[in-house]
Image (cartoon, rainbow, N blue to C red):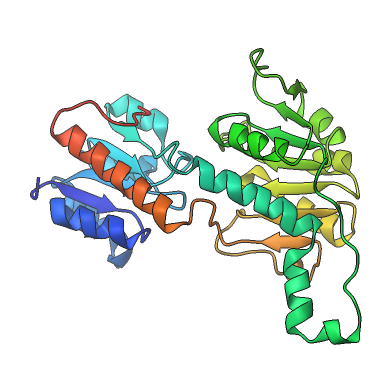
Length: 313
């Protein structure tokens, strides 16, 4: 398989990069100064693209690569891949579900605790020497808070299971009600937001879920509500979220993702009711290696004409 050209869309994981280089002819797209010329001269040798949550395969890239057979995403999300174009051209698509579920769910709970108990602020309070001048302010209890989850897929269910261990009543919104699930279902995000203390975004990013968190939803949560986003940045109307947090119309937020990563609204930096993370939901050594192994496994299966491990298209 050393002659098969694989285009890596952006830097994502050194282990994955090494494993790809061992098996295929690897092209690092981010190192190419003139991408159009590069694609024109390599269009007949690139048969696979490896992308992630930041860069994938849009219609323009797919059209530029006539020999492309498979797009393997180093992510569970598929919003950076033009799935319709892939289907049209018979290009296979894979992602990395399941292996990152636990880490992302763990992080969601961590964000809830960090926001309500002001863990980051408390840490800074000790480091700055302020503790010597008096005790830190009282914070908010997490156990028993009503948790609403948008999207009750693998990750949403894993978050619900963890929150239940803290005696949190769980409710959810999804495209359709899941009759086999015991949690309370609300037919709209606004209704869910109005009936929970903590609202978690855990759904895929699609045209329908773009800005699913808007002013109406934020206002329904109110000044004691907390938003947790471990989905995708564009799920949230970011300017509306920023103004609500600055004006204290929303109680707090724990954010692992943003609309224009790695750029984060600077208005958030000075707020004590927000915890900001650099999109690290699946960012553990163990999970990133498992994700990389799944990408490699899918590519090898495809080119050896075996069934894909985690097919999407």
